Amino acid sequence: MTETVEKGSISINTENIFPIIKKFLYSDHEIFLRELVSNAVDATQKLKKLSSLGEFNGELGDLKIEVSFDKKKKTITVSDRGLGMTAEEIKKYINQIAFSGATEFIEKFKDKADAKDIIGKFGLGFYSSFMVSDEVEVLSRSHTSDTAARWTCDGSTEYTLTADKRDSRGTDVILHINKDSEEFLDEWRLKGILEKYCKFLPVEIKFGTKEDRVDDGVDKDNKPKYKTVTSDRIINNPAPLWAKSPSDLADENYLAFYRELYPIAEPPLFWIHLNVDYPFTLSGILYFPKVKNDFELNRNKIQLYSRQVFITDEVKDVVPDFLMLLHGVLDSPDIPLNVSRSYLQSDSNVKKISQHITKKVADKLHEMFRKDRADFEKKWDDISIFVKYGMISDEKFYDRAREFALLKNTQDKCFTTEEYRTTIKDLQTDKDGHLIHLYTNDPGKQHGFVEAANRKAYDVLVLNGVLDSHFINTLEQKLEKSQFRRVDSDTLDKLIAKEEKIESVLSQADQDKLKGIFEKAINNPSMTVNVDSHPPDHLPVTITMSEWSRRMKEMAKTGGGMYGFMGSMPDQYAVSVNSNHTASQKILAAADEKRQVELAKQVYDLALLSQDMLTGADLTNFIRRSVDIVTQ
Image (cartoon, rainbow, N blue to C red; front, top):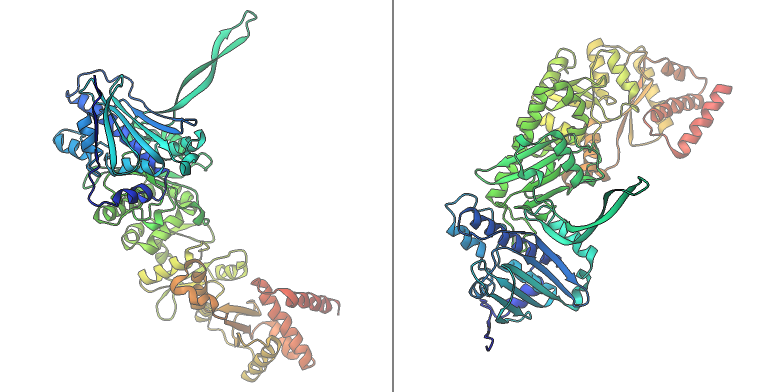
């Protein structure tokens, strides 16, 4: 019998679109394997669905998908035992670019449950195979037919379609790899691609075989025997945790899945299991890792899937920026992708999903706070960066987080913002009625100032996180009549002066003279000297930067942008000389001006040293001068 050979042209709209698809359909050529395996899964899922609906009465048998390669023949083959295609279906689905078999299938069964659970569109994705191939063959036998068909194309718009033999239903896609793509004819390269993109596909995927050493009883000397057993190497987990019901899972399951995703990471603090059916479909598990302040290194840890097909780990359009620090998995068929399925587009669904994730995270944190506040406070140091980042960047999240966001003081006591305002309102109030939130961003360096505040029963917060300068700014804008002042600023002195109304023991003439001595000793135009009246036990000299200038400079370090200009501005400091300290009186009583200046310089350098501002030659001279003073 003479074999019938049909030749024809692939149906395309523009003559030169095929070479564009061949070369530029995807930015990353390895995607071809994801597309072909996804199509094989699609065909397998269709057959299972038809079987469940009574539309297919044959034996399903082993439905594994197999990926194989032959280095000598330079071929890669993806085989399935799914729905298969007739010659007419091959012409319809493959030759008409972007005509989707999945779309037609869903339309046909749209009123039956789970019809949407079909992964792929057997359209453009198939043509990604031409990015790496000189020739592509498709050998397929439909579940409705006893004969098979072979379609062959060399990457032009011409194809050949012939009758062929295949023992069982299903499809083999055979790629004849081109010279530029021979890197893919490597076991570890292919295995890596499969584990990256197909790790959680819902049908088992075989890639070669593996050997396991198993027990085989004992020998005649009663010693254990072992034998080697060869089995299929399955490279995926067809039933990932996020596809299961939360009610069926225990903490151990979530922790085990986290180790599967991030084998070397520390255990997470807690997690959120997402499962939404309306008004969009979204499932996934988001884990809160321990990040503290080193958060930039932990980005891009959330993996995005579409019906268990890996898409990308760049999810900035789906996940709010402040939650990019989370780890885990999101899976949604409603997130639109461009033709490459690799870059997200912003549309209404994406925005709704992003808002839903924000709400679920806020709800989970609020629930934890209400359920076990003590445990929540223990976790606060680790989760505060998420909460503060969210409050800074998202208005709706700020409104939700007010209920559980905490402020911690130097005694390690935690307060919500409203609780704290109630705590300080009777004491830490300035002349204009503002509540003054004193804080330290370095308890070690600012210990003397913290101690001075505590002696007056003032409370001091610890705000030393990488985002805290921005967080403080946000709170000042949101909280009525509230101001945040670093404990080593002149605000503490003003609070004490307001309370005690301290007068100077020096005459105005002596105060003016003391100011002149210090200006000569310091000789630095960026240091503005003032003589003030503080308690005698207060420091002889304090050096402060205005709260506004310091905060802008700190924000410039972490935020850039509108604050970036502050990083290049010269530092301006205020030097406060305590006229009531015995050191001031000793300086004025010194024998001559040279000695006065020397003593003033020594006291000033002590103030610099206390704030870690004394370096280089100035530090060396200070040490020498200190030795001289002690040995005189």
